Length: 490
Length: 133
Image 1: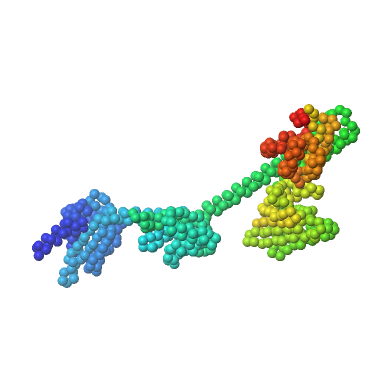
Image 2: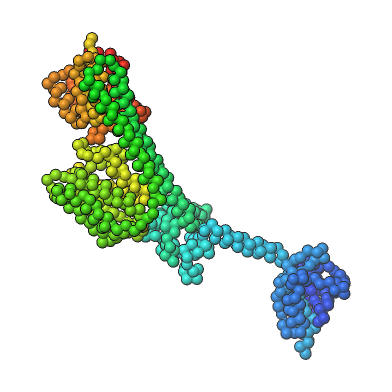
């Protein structure tokens, strides 16, 4: 028995666990060398602490530790495992894991409590740091809207971070992560591309990335970005595929908006340049004539007839100059008059009004004006602008009609999601868009000799459509008629 | 060496055509000046007349015209026979002060020079001197 005892004592002295024995009043009875090393106090010092009332349990943990101790002393609990903080002699707070067990006599009365204790501060610190890192990562992912995923290519298993589920708006408990699950959220328009990208990745084992649209579980369309990289073992076999998915909707939308704005600005700028060029040319032309005529008038010995001719030239040039200035004024006014009140304008009424004002001409030339506004017949807009747009397009179709064929002008409206389309088509002489396409809406641009008009009509139509926030485009060919398409936001 | 006696003006601005004809006549005396306010008619005239009757000619060409621009006129002109082209010296006469138009004129082999309107007596004389035959 003594040999047994010796062996056990040897064993206790050589484990990293400290050994402490208490009596049924929780007075210390024995303390192993290891326990002394953990706490720094000798058994005498422990007893001293008991007398002075100094407790080695960290204050915050005292209430529940005392409760558990009571359970042991009363014999209610025979053994337990406790993790709490204790003080050391040099004032440090350490995490201790206690394995306590109760020894009872044959009557069931508690004689002694034996405790094995281990300093687990290091483990605890690592655990805390890990938990902190995990929380930080989660928070960072939520803020950045980045989820990560990982495929173990040996075991063929896949893990998604919580943010992955948030991005797709799904419940973690309801799904099993897989490439198929990911692909099931891809927008149908990008799905073929995404499948190809993913298939290619597994085939070539190349790190890659791509942008895509996806549809969240709640039906909202968002923009995403995914990037991944492979990890290989020493034999170049893929073992792990690690990737991220980011919701880049806000950035993407801002980017798209910016591109749209830049394109519009560039177009506007080109229009303005063209406008300045035309205006300068049309101001310069009569000025050059006035200069030329004035020079000629200085020459002595002009006949009365010649003087007359030059005077006439001067007069005409001055009124041309005046007209250009008036046109300019009118154009600038239209561009600024956007503050006029908007009202509900009925297309069919508008066309009927115009039909009356050109009645003589359409009756004489047998021109038919048909319209179909069954899809949508109303728009909240500036009436005078819309009238002028309709009037100019209709009068253009009348002006450039083909001879020897019955002339038909058709106007239709189409209603789309948040857009309204107006289509004006005729079977007139048409415009050679290949040659002059860029000039159709240009100021003072004419395509036909010997017709009235001065190349203001389509320029004004475009200006007014754009002032109302719309867009106009044209399709045409020589003797193939002309179709103007106007698009407004509803 | 003599001054060229034949002049053609192609410009949709008829007032310009009247003033230019007068200025040419006053500067060079009785010369033959034809004006066309529709460029297509000018091309047709050259094609029909110059087959029978080749004669050294100076042509003043406008750029901004509604049915056919000066540049499009040049495209048609280039298709004429070498004999016709050799007889006709073309100067752009435009109210444009745009450098891009000047550069485009300079780049064209068949355009001899670029004159900004109005066409003055001094300009006519210097062209006539340069093109003596």
